[in-house]
Image 1 (tube, rainbow, N blue to C red):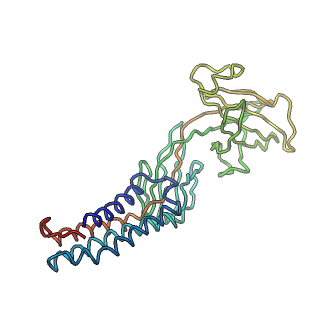
Image 2: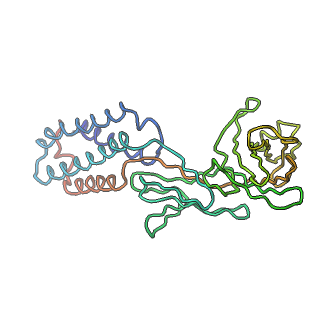
Image 3: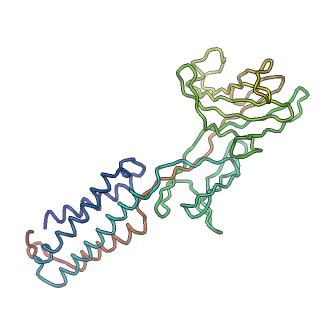
Amino acid sequence: MIVTLALAALIVVGVLVEAIVPGNPLYHAGWFNVLLAALVIALALRMRAVLRTLATPRARAGATIAAFGVAIVGFAGVASGLLGPDARTIVGAPGERVRADDLGGALQFPLAQSGTSGAVALVRGERALAIDHTRYVGAFVLRPVPRTVVEISASDARDAHLTITQPSGAAFLSPVLLMQNRQTISNLDVPFDSFALPAAHVVVKAVYFPPAIAAQFHNLDAPPGSSVVLFDAENESGAEVKNGIGAAVDGGSVTVAGLTLRPRVFTYPAVEVLAIPHVDALLVGLLFIVGGILTARVRPGRMGES
């Protein structure tokens, strides 16, 4: 009996850890899920001997119900490990709606105004669930992830506003750069993005330097604690333009290729999606376990060893 209880506890605790501490690549390892399935099978094989040691039909029925609940929990863990997708982060532009078929809906990203933004919402039909903290949704955990983005405003030599486009971005007309690309500068890994100014016939690459990195580049002339955006402009054919490189402190401005560029750095949410054993299956399994224990009401003195 002790060995059987230990097997059951190991299965339940192992699967609950997957739900409580999600995202570990170990959960998707083949050997991990084979081991979990083997534990469930071993439990099932031991149950016949265990049932023979129980004195009453009620105790045997309770043990069977509880074992069935453990099996539900165990196979929910195996299904998640073998079929669940790897952890991913969904990034969207302000106001964008990103399809999330495995979540049964779409993620609606909030507008960004005056440096503030709300929470991403999971929209399913007419219902919306704000992802403003960790949420359990079916076979997934959704977590808000703050990311640094850069909003750009541009004007020409006459101070006329220029429209910004992102031909390769998530939102074509959005002035907010999501900074999803990375590059190495002086052995430092920094994010970058690009945008186009069709009226000026230039394409601009923007590289973001957080305060800790900006402080290491004395030629950027950044005040302590300030982040910096470095701009590199080219014409539409990819050739460098005159005076096409410049840097601006967050909230400041710089003249690049005869154009005034103003970056504004702020935090904007993305959503991390982590596969877990299905919440409904876990709840059903745990209910069976509790129900089996309450049904059995077996006293320690009436249990034999197997």
